[in-house]
Image (cartoon, helix red, strand yellow):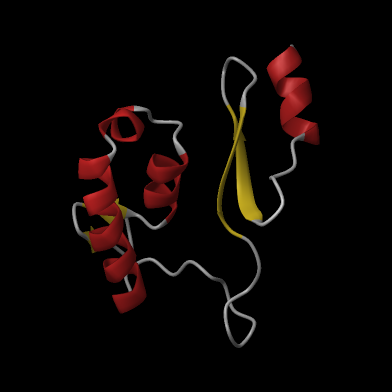
Length: 94
């Protein structure tokens, strides 16, 4: 029951937007906190900004194979949030 208890209390680290509690109870904080210019959401999948992020992070996946293999790494969690498919950001999962 410990992971469920932690999940309710888990807060992201300072400057981070999201947190995931893994099965072992480890907290993984990821994503930039705050709102985008104009007060809207910072992450908008399927946009040019999303495509730029996905292309940039695809290069990070090549440079950091350990993070690329770990589904709970901040890199993988952020790419999931942006709905990255290769070097493109999709508005919906297909």
